[in-house]
Length: 248
Image (cartoon, rainbow, N blue to C red):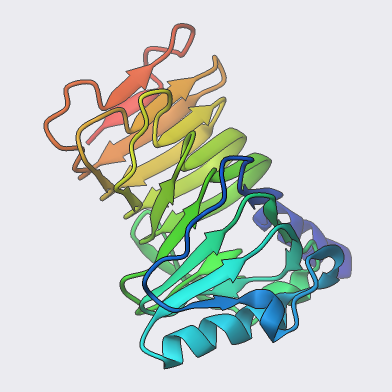
């Protein structure tokens, strides 16, 4: 039973890194920001910083909103639960490393897959009944060799590259993701050899939102998205099967 539970968890959890690049240092925003190290985070990559991150987010939310700020370092953490009016900002050299311990993703929370409500482990980053939340980094999410991933109802703004880069991922849901930062050199969402993706209710200004590449890509469903008036919001690279993209 323990083995089965462990295997089920490994199928759920992802190896995902939200990282900032080596661009010039970020200038502090006008809204208050809360350094996670002031709340006990070590950023050494081995000590779990989950509680310190939770405290920084709760303090920001309790003050009416603000930014949970991550200076350079590697932050080992379990699930991060966002609250209304809170932004996560990763400075250059900051990396979120998500724990492989299933206890770090409890309690179970309400979730959804293609419109179906269910209970599941807390995702690496989760919010429920929250609004005005964002993730701000010089580079965005990168995930590979994983399955059963979901990104829901969050704004991701990056200074460079895609907000979300997924390679060799199965059963991916991108629901309500939005951005104000499009880049001429990349799509907002870049999928490579992704098998089974549901892209729903995403919004961006005109530009390239979705790029699909790799002959292993299939069953990528687009539904009720708003990509402005751009005719080239979706790019399908050479080698991707003609049937890979499904418009609803």
